[in-house]
Image 1 (cartoon, helix red, strand yellow):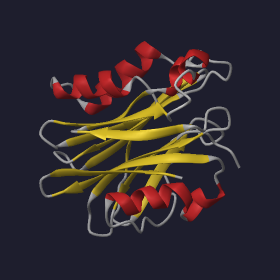
Image 2: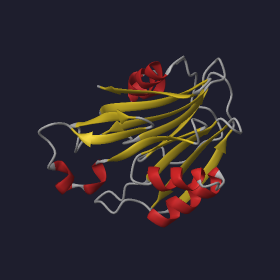
Image 3: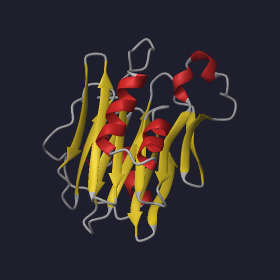
Image 4: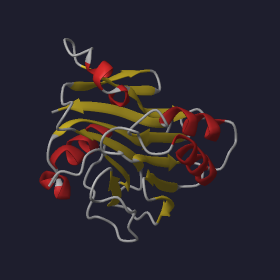
Length: 212
């Protein structure tokens, strides 16, 4: 089943918060994740740079770490930055998600692609999922439990659920990337391209990125 882009919020069995993002694409699979400092970006691979002229939504910062490693934001578009900036300026996570998603709205491409986001907050030990669709908006604080995860996607699975999606076996950021690319329920979600994960550590968040 194809469900497009995916964001997930999880807690490891050792109670480490994790925010994860997966690019899944049928139209623009020639993309990769690039890391620098506390930001991870999705960009076209070499030789496919002109793809952004066909669709301006395919390149963006997908993960930001802020407040000296206290918060991780993961999303499928340009809303990563305003959400991160509002949280950094002191706005509550719920309000930063709601305001930014409402302001930017769903992507105005041929699919009316929703904007999705996951936030992991070490300060409060909380994880959030947010989505704005053509037909509505939802921002939810998820009931995190060690060793479990929640997720939403841009197509089909577009409603944050009260029930966890299964076991979360990852113990570090690289394993979290492997998991969302092909583990558990994600093994049945098609057209994976790349994944990025931010896993809590004692000093902030460990980042990892992995292309298929």
